[in-house]
Image (cartoon, rainbow, N blue to C red; front, side, top):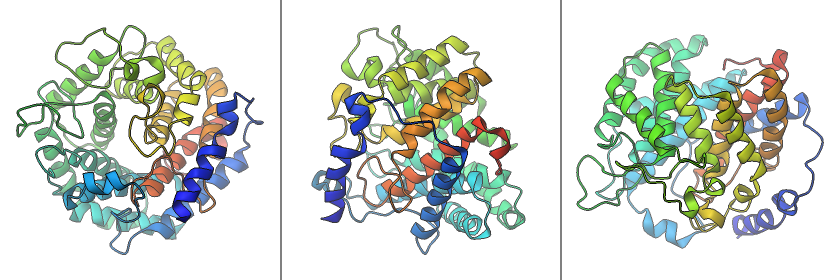
Length: 391
């Protein structure tokens, strides 16, 4: 009941300024951003499960969620994906031993659970585990902390397993999806989305930067798939299809594509594409100008029920990838966009330090905190001398 009450309060108060079109408050200070990051770190340390993971199948308030996702392997996929995100966030932002030790425990969980399977013929949530499991392992491998050295043999063995599974589930058109809508449902899935494929490209690039061999043909197919999703209006189509269509639907209009624009443009940059600066800045301009459509989707319990078929779980996801795009801009452009991004993240932080955009059992607050504190950490580039952890 407490959780439901909090959702109602957030729906009617948390984004009120944005919905009313009010001017945002004064830009955040470096101290406010650092404090928010530390509160998020503290939450992740306290929220970790005894086995080193984050998240779990408990506590969802939405009846449809519990009845739609009863498969234990779906939950293991989400737990591995959430744990990978939390590990990446802690290695990127934390300096205290207690937080880095929590990240080490999380990595052990990722190593021990490197065999996530496809839940069933319809459900391909296992792809989230491979994508963010890889990102967490890459962050650990890259960290200078002495304690990580003991984990390196396990990381070195686990990363190829995650890579092999990701390759097995790449669709013929080059992308990855989280469900399988087509008929017949085949061993190699037929459906993929631009945003999941974009997240995979970013994770694969991180792994490659650590010196691991990736399937270059797989990587290149994925980059081409995202390229094909770009529509004439500047949005990115939700689904990857063999023959792109210019027919626009609500979800494929700019207002329904806000977060997809950011992850896809970040992916193209990670894929080595020369994306024009004007395209990056135009996408960010859409993101902040139409931001109210992301605000209105926050905490709505049914996916795609909000305007332009936005879902709450795109909120913190999209802001994280927006940060990766802003990183690539000039100092002048960054000075414009970092304060806006900080404002939209800081307003999401809860009293316990978590960040929460969608009700999803016990995965929502840790994945939200992970995305949020990584986003804020990137934004410390607004004050270059304040970045103290490895990026």
